[in-house]
Image 1 (cartoon, rainbow, N blue to C red):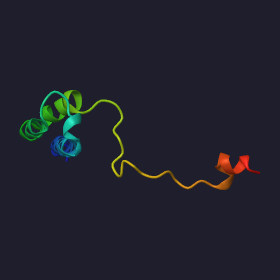
Image 2: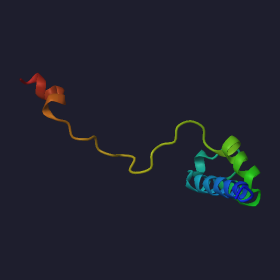
Image 3: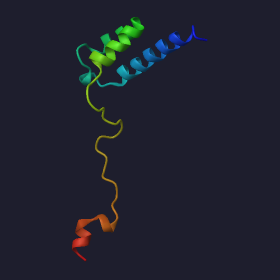
Image 4: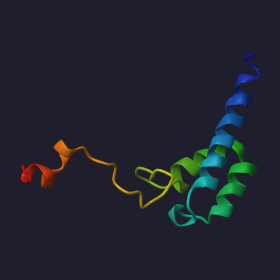
Length: 87
């Protein structure tokens, strides 16, 4: 089992890095084009994956996926300053 564990970790790291790279927007990828990053990750398993996390992945917090112009959630009357002002 211990002989298989390093291979499983390498495959898991490669799959995670490849999926992360594919889901990242083209304009947020750093240093190289997105297609080159995917090729590096898949050709040079561990080294390519580590390079993606260090040099290619966008820095900072990633925005959440989904609609970008979501309407604000409904507020109760006690949270609405206009309603409270009219009391």
